[in-house]
Every structure is written in structure tokens, then in C-alpha cells.
Length: 260
Image (tube, rainbow, N blue to C red; front, top):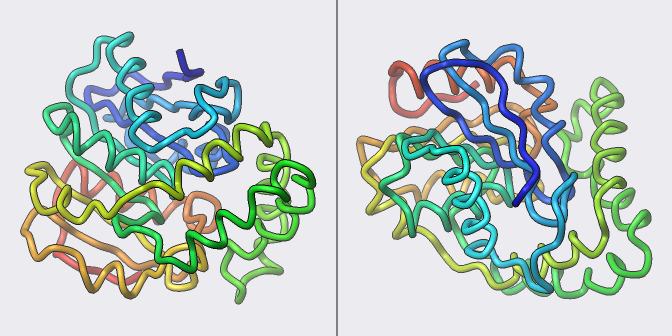
């Protein structure tokens, strides 16, 4: 069973899935701003935080099955599901197989599009360095995930992100990268899912091709997108704004596509 933490007694259950080389602590800045109507379920994904590695190749679908085990253990049948980056990929895998569980799906600085060949090749090339020189891999990559125009303001957050990433089991990170290489395009999931779909993205996100992703979103009334003046880590860069959007969108309604 994956490590998890529940907070709050709200009627609406919001499940939070962190991204690659992260853990449940990444939600600390957003948590105070999330509505009291939410009961939060924060989960350490396989090979991250306090959760063990479950396979040599941790596919998104395999990790989605681990999520379902937690939900069943907690007797949860209707949830709001939010995933950051890799957590979003896992959320899509879950939505594909268990749409009946979802009140809403939020892609949080993530993408439904598959990696292109160049991105897959980059991931494959990272296998050796993750295995043999993990601290170097972390320090070279993590700072680039933040808005380059606010690097000085975000210095403390970047240090936090580095600490969290360095605490990750490198073999858990490796198993997850191997799983991300295998992930497929999930456009059809967004086309067929009947619940509310929310997309939060960053203008300066070096990990996600934001413009392409937003442009290719299916034209459906249940999908809303927001583009923030941030990099890949809205939970650290714009926690208050992100929480406000989540509160409003999942509990109320706003106009369709907004830029902050």
C-alpha cells in the first residue's frame, strides 16, 4: 500500500498526486488556501517519498492501479483527482480505466499528449545518470523547471524542490522514467470523460509544451484551461492563485479559458 495522508473533513474529496522526484510535501504551500469543503488525500507515488518501488518499470497504468488500492482502502468511490506532471499522467491512466470514480480531473502542469521522439530519447539517455550520478541529475534539471524570469525571487522554492528531489530513491526515479517512456497519447480520455476537466499550465514551462497542449484540447464544454505566468511548478510558484482556481472551478464555475 502506498503511503498517504488525509487532511480536513470537507465533503468533497480531493486526491493530490505529486510529480516525478516529488512527494506529498509539495502541497504544503497550497494546502492552507484550499477550500474547507475539501478533504485532502495526498499520496506518495511508488518509489517516491515513503512509498516503495513496485516494479522495475513503473508504467502510468500500474501506478494508477496502486492509486485505486488506496481509494478502495479508504472506501472512496467519488473523488476529485489532481495530478502534477507525472501525477497527471497517472491520473489520465486512472481516468481511462475508472471514469466512474471521478467528479473531476485536473491536469496540473501536465499533459495528455505523448512524448515526441526527442523527449523519449532524452528520457532513455537519462537512465544511466539517474542510476549512477543522481545528485548531479537533480541539480542540473530541477532549477530549469521554474520560471526563468523569476529565478531570484524563487530561490528558496528552488532549494526546497532540490531537497525534495534529492530525497527521492534514485531507483524509484529510474523505474518511473522507464514508465514515462512507455506512456501513450490520452487525447481520447479527454474526449470521452464526462466529468469536469480542468487544465492548469505555465507560460514558461520547460517540461510541457503548453501552447501546443492548450491549442489541441478537445472543444468540449466540460473542459476549462488556465495559463499562468509560471514555470512547471505552480504549487511552489503560484500556490495562492492555483488554489483559488481549484476552489472556484471544482466547487463553482467561471468563464471557459482564462490567462493569469
